[in-house]
Amino acid sequence: MKKTYTGVRGTSDFIPGQANLFNHIATTSRRIFKTFAYEEIILPILEEEGVFSRGVGATSDIVEKQMFKIARRSEEVTDDIVLRPEGTAQVVRFYLENSLFKQSDFHKFFYIGPMFRGERPQKGRLRQFHHIGSEAIGSDSPAIDAEMISLAMTILDAVGVTQKKLKINSLGCAPDKEKFALALKEALAKRKNELCPDCQRRIEKNPLRVLDCKQETCRAIVASLHPGQSHLCQSCKKKFDDVCRLLSDLGVTYVHDPYLVRGLDYYTNTVFEITSSSLGTQDAIGAGGRYNNLISALGGPEIPAIGFALGFERIMLALGEQEKKEAIDVFVATLGEAAVNEGFKLLQKLRSERIACDTDYCSKSLKGQLRYAEKKGAQFVIIIGEEELKEGSVVLKNMNASTQEKIKNEELIVGLKNQMRL
Image (cartoon, rainbow, N blue to C red):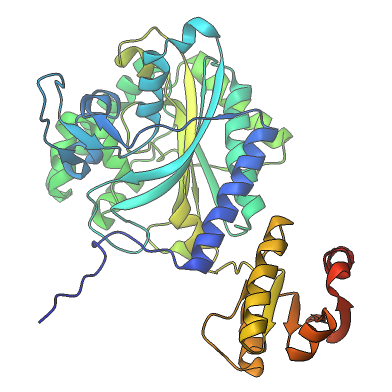
């Protein structure tokens, strides 16, 4: 008995309509990034494990549970090779390896591509997924925080995500964050036995991670803590107030969520998350924040930075898993073998004029060909039969207007283009 294969669990196939929607989101995002003066970079899928264990944090779920490792096969490589689980640490590796801080004091990048995590597959959480990511490196200005958040919201607006909520918070600088972690550890220790096993361990290693737990019991305990902003120094408090003011000036609606910390260790100061209630429990469409200490943690100088990532698959879910059909301009319908040959030559002529076209390859009747043309969303159908071959003409049918006319072969391209412009 022959074995039949299915896709790897936690990965997705995009059928043509979904692939068109995916490309529409990517094209729209690229256009918006250009208007915000961000430059695209394309980075490899493979990285050394240390890029993420040092950057993201050894106690993060990504490093502890979710990285796909490829055992090293060369003594030249000191770490295991992994499939990249996120983009920010990788962009910092690229930035440092190419000494970009010596070329300019400020850079704005974006990237689009697949990421990989050993998730327990469920709706909205996949083992292979795709990110639209953005990083601005070299500035600690609240203005770039506001721009980054506005950029993420602009992309979601442009692709049609109407149901969304922006939550923001400030973790403060490294000393503020440490102060917050110590206070949180003390408060959580009193209810340690009520927490999930992961959070019981997190109290000792990284208590801030408890705030990001999705277990209902842990969330209820966290909600009772009422964390405020008392851990913030005056400088960080002012910066956060400035970010909020700038967002209001831009007309960006937000909610201050003091429980928001994000799950990656490199975040400092501004953090944000964009959610949609249409996604259920896994409601995040995208998130980001400032990472002023990451570049130095990966061996570089002290350089501030901020970034975000939006999830393609989450965006598509928020859009209702709609498909985007790619219509063709012209369908060439033929009757008889001689007409088939003439139609095949006409296809090449139309394509050389950058007119999207197709024909029948399955010997359908004229009625069947017209049905297929309608299914393909063709604006026009060119019909070639025995009579048209004798006359050196074709029938040009306008599918939208339900009209048709005979037109000489030598006049076809000009006549077709004129009608396409109407």
